[in-house]
Length: 240
Image (tube, rainbow, N blue to C red; front, side, top):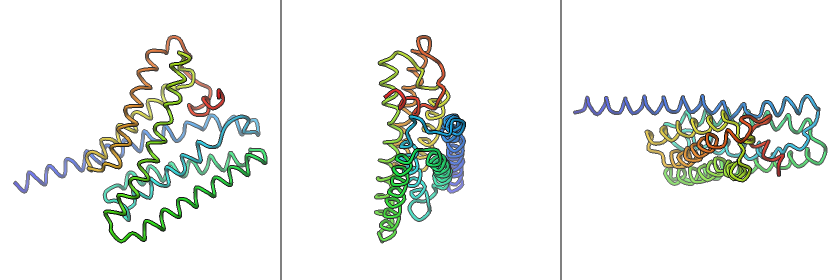
């Protein structure tokens, strides 16, 4: 019986790690998606009408989820920490580039928002470290990071509405939607194997939204453009 239990635990651990590793890989597709936008910004020496807010929001989310994944907050979530730490580095790089080529007004706004994000994150870290009960600390940080993640994963709802309204997939690139679905699905499995509600619930929502985007893409691909010149969130913002 002990041997069977150990084997079962080993299989679950292997499945969890495999799902987490897959999630890390698929997340790279999301992290690199703004590169075409920044190539254009660098080429034109201007941020034009592109918004820097998505990178600010994404940075805060990555920082919060990184903190949740650390051993100080939750156990056996190293792959959550690594993927979000990598994401935070990407967002910081994008913010630096944006600030470099933004006009004075946008530059000051971005620097102010960046300072606010870092201050909020610092407050959450310091406050959570002063919570003596480990389970309560995990729950509080988990709720905060979960809400943040849900808000990020729910952002495609605006795109879904745009696709239905215009009957065009021009502003919903297939590979970006596929990457979001695969990443969310992988971390839904990871959270399930790890019995972590703060991981599998937000990513479960992201998986459903990802499926919705892929279904809409297949439905409207014949009437709309199958690709966009800019990443999903950037293209949408240019239309608002």
